[in-house]
View (cartoon, rainbow, N blue to C red):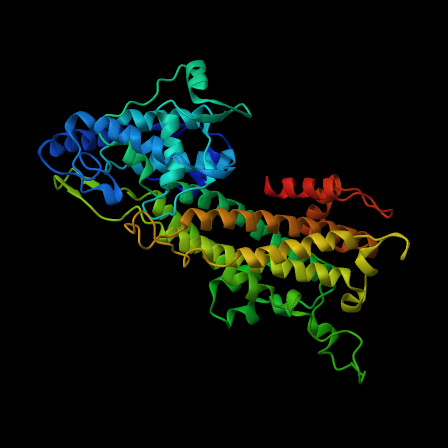
Length: 505
């Protein structure tokens, strides 16, 4: 059981979203929320407060009669439940609910405690609101996507439950849950924030970390089986360039190849004064996709680390409007719902992961092209050349998928389109940015799956398993449990899908 105390970590998201740990609200958080609600209830009695006794957005100039306040909130939820496109997978929705629950638990939203308690129950009982890919523009928050969360909380709409789409009413009755009642501004508070883009973004980052680790493994492994010189990974060479990411990658790769009998030392082969050739058979330096991995993956590592910092700050922030402050006894109107921080980080992450996929695709091409590697048969074909095809077909998949990544890596952050009677005249497109990043990450797992299959086939052709480092042997054994060695042509799709599922999960 993980207790929500006003701050959640990336580790908390992993435990709750991926490992199905249950959550509970600390007593201090419950008291904070109640104080915020009680203060706003009294404060709004004789004052004009946006979204409590006014319309929304460009309709805010219209005062709402006291008897219509509750209906106003229901109208907002129902009218904005207008999403389309793909249904968000459960882990992304669960992450979004956790993000929304946490920000509303900070006591700056004036929301009734029952809304937060019901979100907790959705998480703990694996009841997933049906939320769609297409919706809000990420400026007044994720209005449309979060409206579908709010729709579930009032007992309407649909949910994913035990793998099926069912009506919320039916599931609530089965689980003995009461729908949330609107007390003051629960509709606006639930919808006015960055929690869906952040929820998707957090899951993206958890997957990006896994993907990055496999990029390190594949890059180290190709250095090994190609008998690369070790000086481009050395502490001395990488320490003279003052980037922590580069130094981190080089260190990780040195750790990975530790114990290898295949990596060569330049001083033993080229610095001993015995080299007599006029034209060297072996290349003095490896191709960039092998030699420059620390310099290429280094900034990607730093991008992931910075995005983690920004998104955790976002989910632990009050990203609502207006902001209720019990301490100063005031209500502040502004734009904390604007998603630029998340949008910008998702764009940067998407570019970074696209570059990662480009690196892995080039390493794959190196393995498949005997004119480059001069050690392996074409397409690492272990069968009869001309009759069999090896990895030839899979390379098309890796190349086309990498090309799709390159197109998807165009910025959403700068694609603002004014809308909402130009009230939202500059927007973040943060949820779009996060969703496209999800796609690029999944694509990149496909590229690495093909690369892993190719690497283990190459190891078998070279018959070098015993000379590999222990970490490389472990990777080889894991992939060989999924795909047996093959010489005759086989249908690769189910094997590649299994590798992808294994490395993602």
